[in-house]
Every structure is written in C-alpha cells, then in structure tokens.
Image (tube, rainbow, N blue to C red; front, top):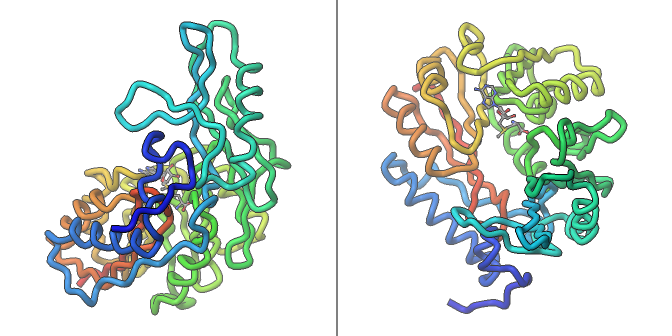
Amino acid sequence: MKQLAARCNYFGECGGCVYQNISYAKELVAKKKWLRETLLPLKLKDKVFEPVRRSSEEYHYRNRLDISFRKTLKGEYILGFKPEGKRFTIQIDSCAIAKKDISKFIPKLRKLAIARLPEGYNIANLVVRTGDDGRVFWGGMGRRSLELAEKDYLWTEVCGRRIFYSLDTFFQANLSILPALIETIRALPLWNKKTTFLDLYSGVGLFGISLHDLVKRVVMIEESVPSLKLARFNVDYHKLTNVEIRPGKVEELLGSLAAGSVALIDPPRKGLSAPAIKALVKAKKLKALLYLSCNPEALARDLAQFKKKGWKIQKVMPFDFFPKTKHLETFVWLTPK
Ligand SMILES: C[S@@+](CC[C@H](N)C(=O)[O-])C[C@H]1O[C@@H](n2cnc3c(N)ncnc32)[C@H](O)[C@@H]1O
C-alpha cells in the first residue's frame, strides 16, 4: 500500500492517529472492513450495512483535547499525550486533528499550566475545548476548574440550532459531521406528532433538541449533574415546551416510558451496563431503538443481546467521527421484531 508522509511529527508515537500515512479513501475502506468483521457474529445481511459517511474535515476537527501535564523529578514540565498502556508522556506543541484554535493554543497552555500548578502537585489531566466561535477554554487544575460561567459556555450550531456545552460535560468531538448524523436521524420514517422521543444518555440534549419539532414530546434521561445543567440551559435557550429532563440512570427510569416511544441510546464507550441491557432488551413496547456507539466491540456485544431476544437490526450506518484515528462511530436502527 502506498504510504503518504504523515502531517504530524508525533504520528505513530503519541497514541492518537493511526491513519495519517494512507489516503482518506483507504482509511474508510479499512474502517468498513473492521466494522464488518467485528459485527460478523451477528450474521447480518449485506444490505443492512450503509457505506461509511466521511467527515467533511479530515484534520483539525476535534473540539476537545485531553492532555497530560507532568512535572518530572528533575523539575522538567511535560505537556502531551500518554499512549495507551504506557507510563510516559509524549511532549507535544501542536495536534493535527485538534481544531486549529486548540492546536495553536498548546504552547501557551504549557506556560499557563506551569504558572498555575499548585505547590506540591506534579501531575494534572487538562481539558482544552473550543466551539464555533473560536474561543478556547481549559481546566483541570483545582476543584471546579472545569466549570464555566454561563457567559463562557461553548456552543456549536447543528442544522440551524445552537447547542451549548461546557468543559465538564460530554459533547461529540467532531462538530463537522454532526449535521450529517442529525439529517440521517430526522429522515428516518419514525417521526410523527403522536410520538414520544426518548433521548437516553442525553448529555446536554443534542438529539432531543434536534428532533423536538418532529415529535409530540421529548424525554431526556441523563445522570451527570453538569450535563443536566447544560441540558436545562439549552432547553430554556430554545424555549422548548415539549421537552422534559429526567435526572438519573436510564436503567432505573426507562420503565413505562417505553410504550409507543422511539428511543435513542448513546451510552459511554464501554457500552451498556448489564442492568441497562436488561431494561432495554425487554422494552419490546418501543416502536424503534436507535443505538449510537463509538465502540464497535461493545456494540457487537450489546447487539448480540438484542438479537437473542428477537430484536431486528434494520440498518447499520457508520459515521467517521474520528478521522486518522482507529475509532469509528456507528448508528444502528433496531425494531422489536
Ligand atoms: C456518549 S455520551 C452521549 C451524550 C449525548 N447523547 C451527546 O451526543 O452529546 C454518554 C452520556 O451518558 C451519560 N450516562 C452514563 N451512564 C448513564 C446512565 N446509566 N444513565 C444515564 N446517563 C448516563 C454520561 O454522563 C454522558 O453524558
């Protein structure tokens, strides 16, 4: 295979990118193959799989970086990435997949972090984040350092709707591909004004807000306090009257909400917990279940449980949320039979 020159000096070392040395077309072929192989035990027909949707931005798409900061025993400061399973940190001064505003900020961040490291501390995990307007915020040193004031909330416009997030909330890392995902979901033949949409693992409410006009009612379920605060802010900002936010765990709150509803689940990387799987596979009164996953292995494991209980996998739609890295986002449409 023809090898391309990598864009970044840390390629192959920092543990982030794995595909800077091949064309984007070949990267998408590799990701498609990986997804197919990972889902092979489910014995799905070819027609179930949609092609991998490409990201409009191949580089400089990440609106968030998690960076290690360390003072060594010799008194040197290292700011960079810790490759998976390794004990050392690779010093960086730019990142080819971070938004340019973040990448340019890294040398300044190093100086700010050195100045702010409290006496007696020698390690910190920093979060750096931006949004559509190019402001960059960071935190990770000291209690509540990831909390932003309301005036500083970060935001992005997705399909004409502004969604706010913060340093201490989850938000999708690649803003450039979100319109394609939202348009795909909105085009599914599932929505009408009698339907309740359950936005489960809702974070700051991206999906509920993006779909609220197509349905009668939206119920968001989320357990993280900072995300719930931003979800409330987003709902108020858009003056939505048909959206309800329920704080708590999906597995505990789903219950009778399932009947006649369409649910979207977007769990953390590790996939569904045992109690969540139990609650969801038996929710046969749902009209449809939409599963968004950033981890094909966890997805394969969870889908096997749904299949065992008679759920039908209608479509598997991969979206390349993380160009140049090994990761792939997958959106799956299931029906109870
Ligand atoms: C991958 S994020 C998805 C957030 C949101 N859907 C989005 O696109 O921005 C997963 C979210 O699930 C929340 N979460 C994790 N476990 C949960 C549980 N058992 N019940 C409710 N929320 C949970 C996390 O706090 C996080 O906000």
